[in-house]
Length: 358
Image 1 (cartoon, rainbow, N blue to C red):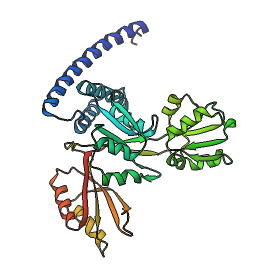
Image 2: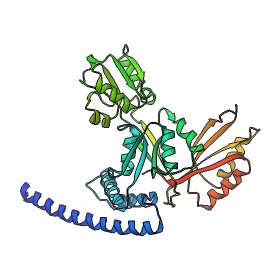
Image 3: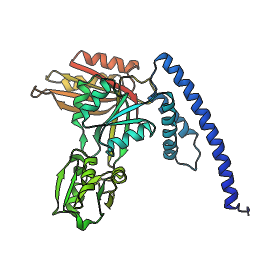
Image 4: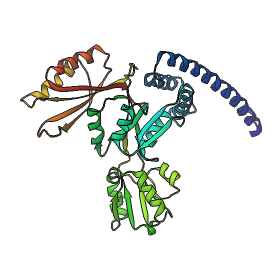
């Protein structure tokens, strides 16, 4: 039977390990600074999604525990964020205000060392990026229970930006108020999508309470912080930021409630080996057009992970089609399929090729 080591002895070992970790972190940071200098000379982007994907994939393969994969991901997200900040300031616009789920997704993607800019609307995020006032923007694109965010689809067609990364966030909704007591609640507010995601729960637990819409979950939390009889459906981050109490946690109707977000910028990421390409196009309304539209992808053995249609503004019964393809635009098979598709399209735009979310 092995002899147990005293806690103090184990803590001394931890201190020694911490010293080594600190030394190695600073060594890594020095190397990142050198890379940043070389990037600045070549006017290269500080944020490289394909490289980030490669790092996470390699670390996942090397990890033997006991730390789980997600913990390693979280630790290295902050290491990468701090390293990028040494190379250059990274400004991230997002659909705000603070403590929205988009804010949480932006922090999850870029880490806490980035500079975050909350904006009032999704079009504002696109404009901030296209005008060069922010390096990247984060916007919601779809929820697993409520479907696509149409404002984002519309702006992807109109704006001169590219999708350069994606992120998915598991959404947990909290009912928050100043007191945390259900008996004090006379009105409930939140963003329409958040309310839709917990509609059944609210109907079962607060059937006689008035429910109103707000511009965002964060704005709902702000209102709840000033009104003792108001409750907000919002995020755990909103609870911390606005000093609210939890009436009930995890009130979403579906446990598998996930929102996908897009990172927009002006770059075309290099292939990572596990990529997605998004395109949008319109076609003439004629017999067999849907079959002809999909045929180039089938012939080139390209898997379509998503198909979404959207009515064309001011043109009744004409539609835009949004497709997500597995693969990168630099692959010959993707280029062949899109070239074939162009012959039957009235309009086509490649929205971006980017690493699949980790």
